[in-house]
Structures are given as C-alpha cells and as structure tokens.
Length: 120
Image (cartoon, rainbow, N blue to C red; front, side, top):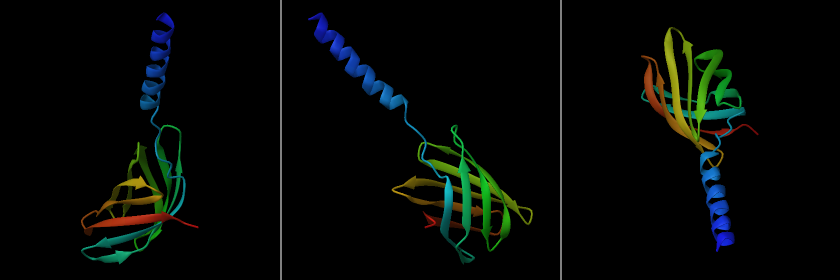
C-alpha cells in the first residue's frame, strides 16, 4: 500500500511540475506581418530576439520606416511596441502553430489587425 501511495505521489508531482513549467512561445527570428487597418494595409518585417525571461528586442521595417522595437512574451501572448513619427505603435497578439495574429494600434494614425509568418 505504501508503494502505491508513493507511485501516486510521484505521478501527481510530474503532472503538477509540467503545468508550472509552461514555457513561453519563441518569437526569435524574422517575421513578415500582413497588417490591415482602417487607413490601408502593409507588410512589415520584424527581426526579433527573445531572451529566456520572455523579453523581446529587435527591429521593424515597413511603411512607417525602420526602427528598434521592444516587447514581451508570456505563454503564447506577446506585446511589441516602438515609436515612429511621435506615435506609439503597439502590436498585441498570440502565436499559434507558427502563425501570429492580433491587433495593432498605430498611435493616432490607425487601428487594425495583423497576421504573420516566419520569413523563410
């Protein structure tokens, strides 16, 4: 009986450890986004690097120019932001099956949605 209890405790420990050890999605690499806004569309490229704690750094290149970006990743959700022409640009989305999607706020310029894939 003690052996069965010990086995059950070990199994429960393994399942609870797996639940707590949920890792962040990895956005490291080059991404091409398709952005649709109320002011038009575009296909910017992001080159991102993610550290072990989920901090994002990298660059944006698109219709708004080129600039450095920063952000965070938690589980499969991410937040990217940068300044262009005195406007705070914010991308909030999720990564699922190697596809990103979400909402974008282009400062006071426009609101929209985006999808994206890793650049081949």
